[in-house]
View (cartoon, rainbow, N blue to C red):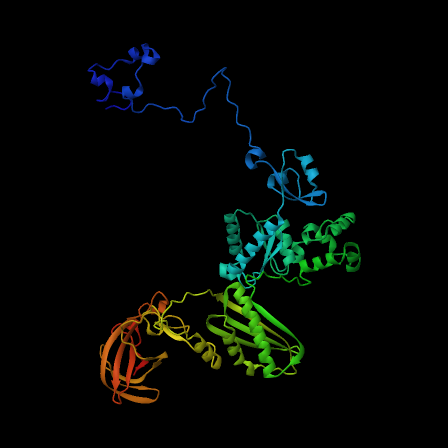
Length: 553
């Protein structure tokens, strides 16, 4: 069928059996009676552009271009937040639209209403802002750095010393933090500097989303910033404007005495803190306030009986605090302040959360001999840095036939108090093919996992020990004799091998590693668990050295 013409079998002309009309006959017909292109069977007819401008309905007027979007269509109504001080209303914050219109924080609300008539004015809520910053600081302590503190109602300090390498560096951490704030619906700017004052100033007045300042360049970096970046008092800013001081660099050449007399000592301190000449500590938020009991003594004490009496009072006070919070103690730290300013520390731990005052007094009493009172103890403090939730438990009523197992937690605590805190432990299996990795130490009251059905020795060495003078027939026979720890052993019976492959997903060196384990019995009745490195055929699997790994019986 030719392109651009002809007829197709499904056209109306073919169905009716009529011949195809000529083009002159079609053109003679009225426009509403002419056949459509679809009926004519056209294949390559040209089409108009689908987005062609629609002509005007009346008058033939051309379409005018749409007006450029204004700030109302993009951002909506400008908004400011105000706070009331007596009979005066001050602007505390402004949206981007209001800032473009010339409104600034610190301006009188009446002046802002006079400049912009269509203005949305709302009351500021500093308490809600502070609550948000506190929540962000607690999140930062748990996920980013242990030292975080809100700096004002619109910022937060993070001490990133020794933490940024966990996130791939400072730049990557800043990008991650900005994405986190974006998910919460906030925008922000971040500055990392050697001093809190310089970071505060650069984050708010540098105009950059991320500013990474090299160490020791704080003085040069903040030189061109306005004086408001130093967090000065309003009276100091007013005095600086009266003397023509606008930038931080204007304060550098001024002597300290005239500067302090004109702008106040606080200005000198803020300047030195920003430059790193004076330390500015950050008081971090504490996500958890540990229960604490304290006693200030009227007279120093030094006898065991007096110390025991004070410990009992401290434990009673601490138990009351734990009951109010519904918590149980897992660790306690006793601090004794000596008259000469030194301190004596005693710590205890429990296998299970408890607030049994009698049990805690007994455990602390076992540690009294470790306290050296010296010239006398003038204060004692008991803190519970580790606590857990402890609620009431429902006990099933049994008429003398209860199968409830006895609680051995007090026994474990007493054993730990007499030896070492971590000495009582229990062994549990761990998912691993390598024998030394298949056993883990767990807490004494933890429930161990099920043990595999493989035959393993009762005692396994901490590390496999190398055997010498080994005589064995390769590749699948146990050794005939060997020397271990200076003693010669002759094997009379053996079983194996049990082949164990290395865990290649842990170390590349274990990709082809192979161990062949044998259970052997010596002439004296000793039974050992030994292995050979390598399968005895391929060299990459091991060097064919023998090791002692455990003892049976």
